[in-house]
Length: 455
Image 1 (cartoon, helix red, strand yellow):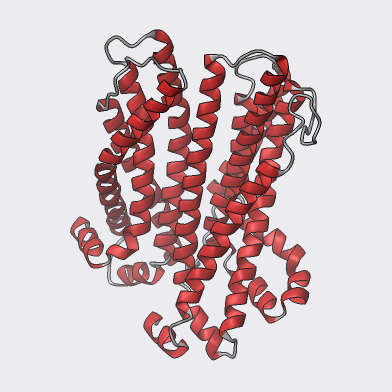
Image 2 (cartoon, rainbow, N blue to C red):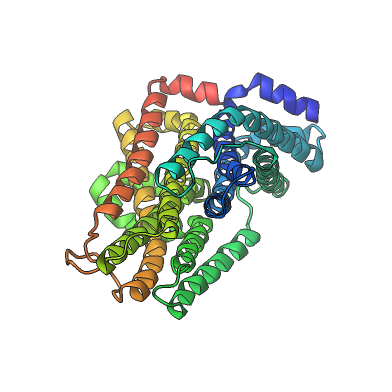
């Protein structure tokens, strides 16, 4: 089956481009920050510089590993779901589920290995640039030399291979079960277990903030991790959340969007599980970015109001938060674009059938646009809830204000809605531009030809 996997990659390289891109970016980020461990272990590195480098590698490495797994899992899930007919054919011709799993896991492992090797050079360049940022801000001594060693290399290879192989195994396991039972979307009780576990753990972390002191250095950690866990929980519950939102929006969409609204509700009800791969990055991006940026802004205002200059630890925290948000933006956009592009381009036959049944290209394009709008509203709503939980807890303890979003002059009182609107704008732009652009490209193919090619 491994030889079959290699032939599959050679004959259909386009299928693996999205996975390769996600794995490449993931390996680059993981190796970039883990190279700080190699740098911190160099000769003559002082204690302050070593602590700064080690902290950045540990914190961002943890975030990066989580996001890498979600990015690769999201891409591979869409990839495997689109191979339902192929998997069915293999099963009907005598292949066992174990053989199919070995084939798909082998494909994913090869892609992950290639991505890790390709990421070594960019990771070294990015690591040098990151070290320069730490030097320029005074967090690391000028005499510290950059090092890219075994910690960076082995962490990138091992984490990426584990993420690719693990995500592929889970995705193909669901797919082979669906083929065996005749269901396109089997029940996922384990997913629900992890989702509710993440929500409970997130609520506990947010609640723990109120037991901490306002000046405690680790005050931001509990609400930040709480917001992240809540975002993960909502992301895992995406199919159920989307079904609930559609129940509320069904009549308004039909009244406002006409035929496009009717098609949107009908299609999204049938494809709620598939669209979960799009909602995941939306919820994660909105929740994590909103919580991190607002909490850092509140912290900056509190320090400024106190009249005390920022310490090295304060600068470290600010740098880490900004870097984490940057990683979130990149990965969320990659996950979102990959999932939307794959899901929309795969619907060429569906679009052709709708046009043959009487729908105009404008109505089909309108349906895709309304779908993107519903996905954006759903992802932003639940992501904002997650982020808001962490913000309220942190702000209540740090500056004694639950929502310091006004225009006052006190600590944390001048943030406004600018940050949130910026986050929402990025999410909406990535969703609508990708979905509409891909659908518009697919509609250029004549309807009869689209149905014939996809058949």
